[in-house]
Image (cartoon, rainbow, N blue to C red; front, side, top):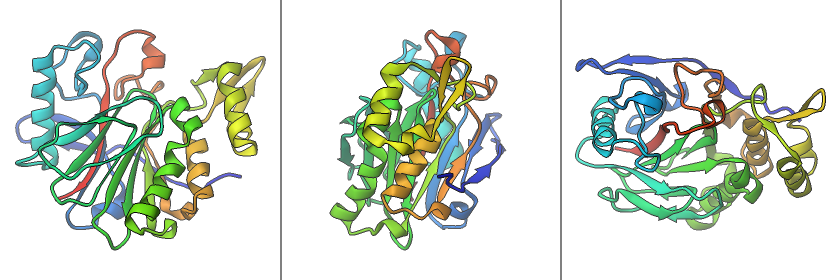
Length: 273
């Protein structure tokens, strides 16, 4: 089953202090006053070498001061004032944490976070994995998830939908989800150690997202997560597929698979002011 999604394209923001920021957004969410969100690219930062230039992860070997400067510039650019963008120690699993304190810097070991507190901005760091932002119609409720193939196998995306319903009373039909830039089926070659567990867990949903090219197999990771979100109850028209393949767009996004060595991480974020 093919999920109809809204394809969005590049939106550049030129910041007065000369920061050239690639910032992708969902048009419908831009019209919602107070909701801050976006998928950032790699341009406009101070990091150098393989982390050039807007690396926002302290865990990849980059100069910590450059990362701090990058984060400060991003916060000013996107409108986060007097608080932090909360990240997590991503484990490629399905753990979900609730965040209430806007002064939290890192929430802990998890691949999903939820908040209903104003001023708490949640962030996920990726370099090929799928960043997923969640909003709920009529509620100041926000969530973020990080879905690599292991997180997808664990079911982080549908688990988040269930979590929002069980912990916050948010029905799946009121949830909207945006899947950001991630490695595409054009570049994501996988072996049987990935395809077989996915097919065993998700059956035809996973098999429909595998592409054969000769004796090689490629995975459409975003499509699989979109299907899992639909299976969890989110209407297909409320699922937005944003941005290009990170491996193809070398000038705009970090890609671990493309570089096959150390590289930076781009930020995806959501929260209510």
